[in-house]
Image 1: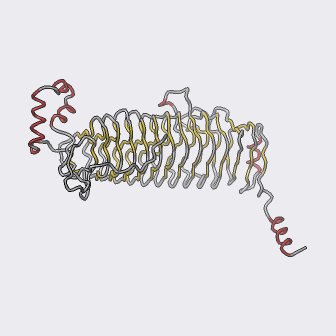
Image 2 (image 1 turned 45 degrees about the vertical axis):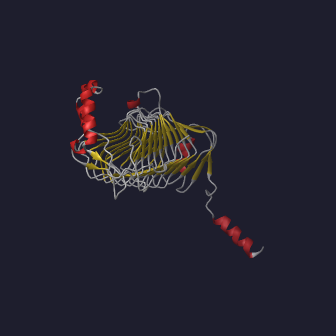
Image 3 (image 1 turned 180 degrees about the vertical axis):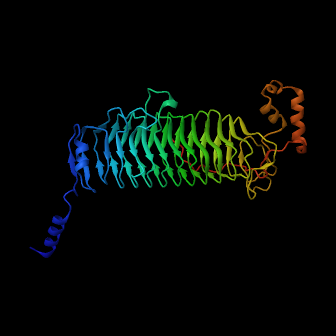
Length: 416
């Protein structure tokens, strides 16, 4: 026998018996028994059919399903619990979790032992929580289709994906609908949420006390609120889309030192962007379009850089509740305002006069809404004319000293 053939034969004989995977037939208890008897590193291959849960994966294994693989829980607890490092679960349909928020009953639960877990390409149907990343570092949750429960009120449902104290977790390219929040990140850091799509939820993405993370390329459509970012610092929020979200497209509540760039918020029911007590953030090259309020800016938000953004077709471009001066331009580059009839005599793309979105009457209306009855009166029109002719009469507030004559091209991908 030629030497090369001998070497190939020796390599084949030396390969572990489980390299090709171990087939596990459908049935009650078959998967649990296969896990209990498997050596670490084994791949358990599931065929089409019904497998009974719950199961706990307590060693480093790979579980691979095919079209028609269904793992169903008994309506209590989590259906799959991953309690070991370097586990992967792929291609399985999972349903039948319990209904307890106290124990966070989920389709797939990753404990703090599940470091480096890979959960991808699964379908999760009707579980209280879809996937719970509970303390698992460096986990990857990707390309799963998660549909929550529709038999509960929205605030009684669980989250599509819950990330708690799971540094380094990546959540990408998932589709999530019919839960409470699509992805809720709580008390974590250094997470990446990218390329996910959200429908029929309270919040698409919700951050609480989670720093140093990235939110990029996600699409929120028709939810109550797109991106609710709260009590967090050093976030990068780039290239996301909020389309037709009911309340706000993006909310920054006690968010500091974040970069909010190249996002599109279009057609919101109330506010494209709401900033509350948010400091030292950079908002650049976003587009806020077709909302009753383009940006609501309040609660002493200070030292933010706001430039290169496009405010297009909002009923009120800016609602600024405050009296301190706010300059919204950077290095001679401001923002585009669709309602600003400015001139650019030197054709440098920058208007020759400053833009002030609000006047004294606006401030009165925000504090005394009943005064709106007087909007058409000659006295109000006279005050507004005087402020236009004599800018020194204007109150402190937002001024864009270098407004752009045209909006920047959209960077975020607009969903079809």
